[in-house]
Image (tube, rainbow over the protein chains, first blue to last red):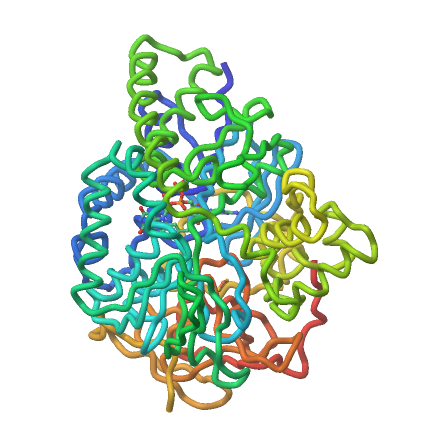
Length: 478
Length: 103
Ligand SMILES: Cc1cc2nc3c(=O)[nH]c(=O)nc-3n(C[C@H](O)[C@H](O)[C@H](O)COP(=O)(O)OP(=O)(O)OC[C@H]3O[C@@H](n4cnc5c(N)ncnc54)[C@H](O)[C@@H]3O)c2cc1C
Ligand code: FES
């Protein structure tokens, strides 16, 4: 049998465990990731030459981080691994990527998408001011570069990462001015039965909270963000918000970390033609998957946060399950794999229940989209306001996101809709009175990441796998 | 000099010097261009759609808000580009730039 060409996108927990399972069964997958090093988001590795130890970097997850990195290092000779390589398109079982300005085309028979997630953001008036960062971005600044995003940082939004990153900042010696959560504390209590499916983790969450309080960090629940104050030349200077009782407060700061949990990165799956389904609880479009991670397109699989937002432990297991699906499809199923599959499924059932508890405890505040003032910027890239989008809905009757995008340009800027398309849809739904699923889903379009200017001036390279050089040439974009 | 980012640790790395808008700027080996710039200044670039100044947003190569230029007119993503000594960076788009083809 000619060997199957297997391509994995993403070297986070899902991608690494997936690769490991395939290698263990005698296959040699190709693995690409746009980061310089393996680890993905949660277990992101700091640059060579940095000294902080695992405990400092990953806290309670240090052992898991080390285990994943060690697995990867062992696996490394058994893989064709391309780091620093962004996938920007796929078509006809060929993936188009670039590595430091060099084009790279990879043909595959089987594709495993382990592309992870990005922050889900709800805009607030003034969020385009310099000094507003995504919550995940604030964490990357600390983890990857040992810097704080500001001298006085406010954390606003909702979700478990809000407290985690705020306490990581505190531990690292940064000034945390406040943590402002849009979720009411009571939601956490009603979600408790589900959260207790992972009692130790829930307890750790409460400890984080206690720690923030002990350090005198101002904590507010059930808030509504009103405005990021500041000026176009010096950036953020304060956050104005309404407390749960309706009174209005301001907190001075020069940086804001903004995030509401995560949204899956699904553009490549979209280009592959995979079907999506609407998830009522999270109000997001998720890939249609079978219980092993097969998408609706034969020989295309998805795992990890790019498939379902369930966290890193689930991502490791889902990566392994997707590999098992692939092995089955290659007629390499064994009784051991069947037993392993069963075990992974029962572990995932617990993790999924917990993830659902988190979604209930920290709900996406869809109602805030309807309340955004007309002068709130929705698209940061091209400065398009909520009012402009609402006018498109009214004047042109554009009730479907892709039509509204064509008229208003929301979702067409340089972020390719990653930070605005989901909110644009909420604004359209609220303005038109249509349910969100009727408004639809913004289709992914190539290039899913911007292309280097020089790309097709040179012939595609023969795919000899390479890691990026020690001192890589700058990435040139257009 | 007012900075945006604050270094909290890892400050014993070797120094590198690059040029930013014609001025020498000290950074540390392993810094991204973004960190090198924002530990010395509040911004990375001018927004092309309003008068606002921008300083990046996602730090994970997803939003593209952190573009700066080389003197030759090439655009670099500051959050994912490591510094190297001798880099010659502009925080505004130089005159003799390539025609920008947006996709
Ligand atoms: C910024 C951020 C910080 C987080 N921090 C925490 C945390 O501290 N604790 C926690 O429990 N959870 C955290 N999470 C959630 C956590 O990331 C996930 O639960 C876990 O990492 C998911 O693993 P994964 O393998 O699915 O995806 P990831 O770990 O996200 O890995 C996906 C990989 O795919 C690569 N990729 C994506 N698109 C492309 C492309 N087009 N071309 C090439 N490569 C691509 C990315 O570079 C990335 O390395 C964080 C999420 C984000 C976004
Ligand atoms: S800050 Fe988002 S791409 Fe660099």
